[in-house]
Image (cartoon, rainbow, N blue to C red; front, side):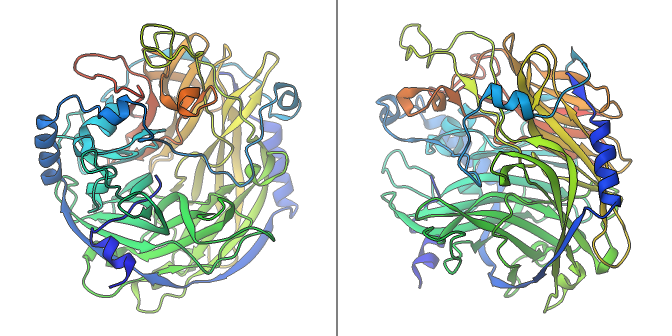
Length: 626
């Protein structure tokens, strides 16, 4: 049996660790440019077999939750002595980028960030059906009896359907009913969910796979939940093996608390060379995986980074038969992929809402969206790129014949050089100046960059997407949201996509909007979910509902109670004064057309919901009826 097969069978293994501006003039200019032929089209190539899809096994979430609850009841404080000593059993999950992150300069970005031109109001209103989701204490102390690393940021996944709300973070999962009542006896670690050993056994010190970037969606057409997350492997002592995997789980019914099929495929890509002379190339990890699907397939994209020197190597798109995944491991199944995209970064597949139609042109089409600001030397871009896989109905055959093409569109400006966000001052037991505190300054919050912020929505021929962007007004440069609506041609033939609408949304009063997620229902209405924070506001969650994107109202749903006080910001833990936030929020649409969001915020610390030693982040799930 190969070393990889031994690891997959559980002997050892590990991963690594509102000021609103509708840029009407930009929209008109982009539309005119597209009409004039400024769009650049390319045929990329045909699919090929990437490798086998392996069955990891089957799990029952309710059983795992009950086991976790029993273990948690037998635990003491959940804070291991090693953690109290400050040992390196925590992980700041890095924000890997196409180019080195550029230092923010207020003077530089004030001259080139897109301009905000209209003010919007901010109101406080608790969302109907909204509730607290997972927090750092769930992830670190409760899931898997505390045999986990302390992790920042949470990286949220959300899928709503069949009366259930599934939420995941790095690295824990819980299922709720639509009123927020937890349906699992305790949160389940993602390692256990994917059939692996503990991330970090605090008794034996054995290291298991360390997973990152959970993604989820509910496929209303078949009534199944799908969850994906990537991993790198190491031996029991934590020594990297330079092997990476993509995990994928599919619920066996529309009840996510019951049985799941669990799969994996290898993503090391050892044969792929570096982009530039001197770069090591692969073996690689599949960072920032994205998950989408159409009638015929499930699609996962990965940003490949070298496990040798950390350089970006390229983007890879994988395609799998949805029918084969949902049927369970009945026989050999292949994973299909395309030539590595060396000059593309973080490409997002789309999903369709319940009661929305899938794209059927060209014998089934799956669309993808990419922002290009992070690909430029300046970090400022004015192009968006749409990809399309055609012939997706052939995924149901023994020999799929998929084709990948793309079109690049002139768009409004997006500035990926986003300033760290300022937060309101308040108690900070870990990093503050009180008894036992580290005595370090109040941290800023990381705002990420200009890549697409959440899974784009394909809604009856239109594609909706959002990204973060730096935005300026007469006062300062802050963080806002760039929104896009693309229109597909809907007919057979060459890829035909235009920009139908776009705009920039930002908050008033020197506040910041972080990590947007968009949800649009089959009727074409929806909202954007964000974290909102500023000098006079603790990190909170908010939504921006249609049809007022042009002159929006920002509705605060999860009201933050404290400042961020996580370990990633502090020099004592290797930080530089900026706490890791995000790296993304999530959105989902249910069968009634309600739009749900999961975003990060800082909740109140209570006896019922205590914070952990090293972090106090929480998540808030918001439901709105647009």
